Image 1: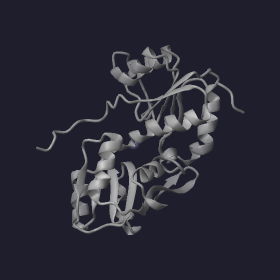
Image 2: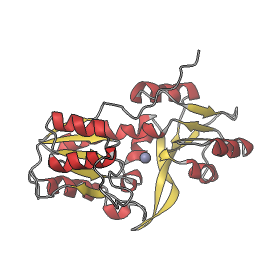
Image 3: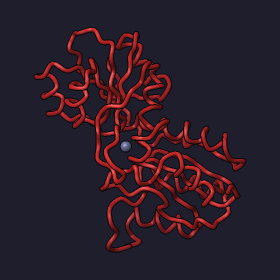
Image 4: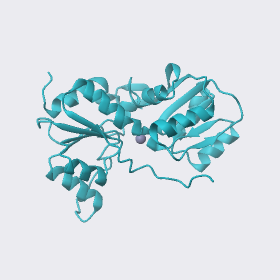
Length: 263
Ligand SMILES: [Zn+2]
């Protein structure tokens, strides 16, 4: 039943992205807060950071919906001279709810990887990259057809998401099937190519991952983990279509680390 309490938002999100679809190591759902608290203003974000929390307090947001979990590692000591712990203290003192949708959202229909696949206009989208979740094996990545050239795809990420750090390992071949998996997806490069992709797009690809991909003659586009910030704006839209609360997407973009522009 829909009401103006946090539990109503949780129920709506968990119907679309069940908590049991998260990978077994993940910590998703309510992080801090009270399901019986009345909601008026929600801010959506990729990450919960001190800057975002200060912004939420200043602008009277009572609820944060994030992609990355706020509480991922167990807390042993709440030493309040530590910046992260001070952030938790502010969240609790200001009665702000924090709710996170992580790998349950990545695998979900109309989740992270469907949204990223749609962003670059892929057609005939299907799932790739099986992962073990609490509810069984689900497909985290997406694969689809494109007619775009690599320059046009890079331009979409730059223009639509404002990304600055994009790395391309080009194998000189033309491509039709693109695989995409937001976040840190280097471990899925090989499985994606075995599923038939000609180009794989992900983030957080390390030197040795690129080296292995080059040896295997794979084409890889690393758009950065920050490409997942598509979450903020699209989740704000999804919630706004379904609730009357004031909903805003985080545009602070604090985790976009600018590189030196190529001269
Ligand atoms: Zn991520």
